[in-house]
Image (cartoon, rainbow, N blue to C red; front, side, top):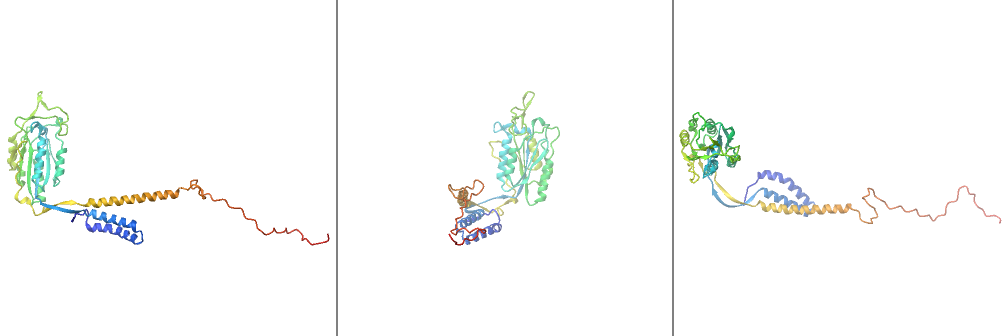
Length: 366
């Protein structure tokens, strides 16, 4: 039996001790049936908050002491339909990010997106659920507002994020994963990521798209492209193609490998830097069978008894307030109490007194 209390045990004792003392005092005074039940209920709540359980084995876990920054292209071309046939490229991005999360347990993740400008969507955190949720609700560039974008626009934000991570946690390693199609849609040259290389210990550049290209749905702020139509160029559907030359250049600047992604090929991820893999801190995590629900059921049963008792008490009080038919005390519902009539005084056996002015009578002659 093990316990995983929801609060510190001493704090629980401090909260429950006064109530338990009151229950014991009322029990000693003679109300045994009622307060015995309430004392049992109190103890059941206390044990439930201790979260008892039965260990069912243990598995060793792996913690990765590294910071991973994901740089993601969210231009309209990333919804081009050439992933796994005719699916949007972003479907592949979501699947690959999930693989990255699974590959490096315990790592901290940050998310930077870019289109016309770069934006940090998520700071470094171990909350991978927040990372995947951010990808699910992420909105791409609105087609009507697109003015072109540079594949290197996130270089400054990436450098600042890595430098901040290195300063706050110098013992942790850092990895970068750049995910995009490499299309440079402005006339200027792409910005360089070389300044970030000194902070990078591993990662990769992942490329999405095909040389044949894929059509792009008109986007209005979400990945589903609910406008229904496709972007056109000279009366024909515009096709977005991958530029792996640009992506390889970014990989060279960051000193990480480039990988062209395909739905049929498994993602090849590098091992975490040797200094980041830590078994000692993670230890062993047991598979525990929770038993708190047993005490929760007991509490529900006892509360049912209390509710039934309260219902009976209310019914008794209503019975006392309702007058009985033929009661000599009349009705209470009329707003006043009718008293029985007072009997007339009983006549006295003494003769009435003679009037004070009546002269005395004497015997005389007839």
